[in-house]
Image (tube, rainbow, N blue to C red; front, side):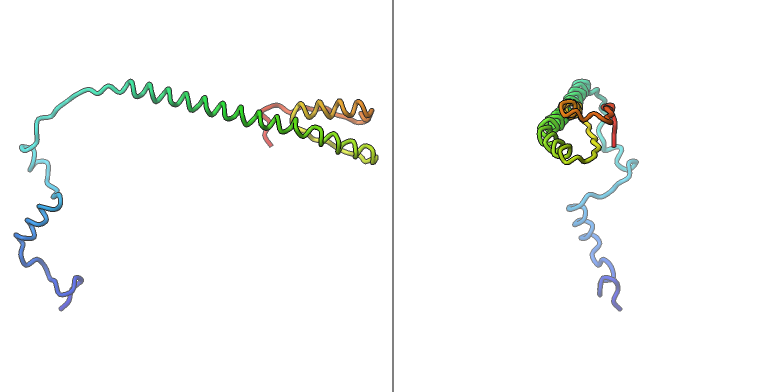
Length: 139
């Protein structure tokens, strides 16, 4: 009769199997059985303060880099808005010449100031509301 492992029904040479397993794999033993074979307990204090200080310094550096990254992204964002001013004013001029009504939304203060000055020059301040959103405004 065949079992799960074919014709094999169990170990035929227990001592050889035990020696083979003992030589090649770790055998789990109970603490009470091996306690007398263990060395004396050794207690020592490890100083980890320096590594904690280094970890804190690294965290501060990471926070500093994150702050620099946010500032850089904000500067790029502002610079891109300023770079768009001439094109926006050119388009706004075409809209005014065509006699169309228009509504303008802008986020950056430099863009808002440039549009305001442009509309003053064109004398198109018929219905004009100037509003600046706070810096922490999220869409």
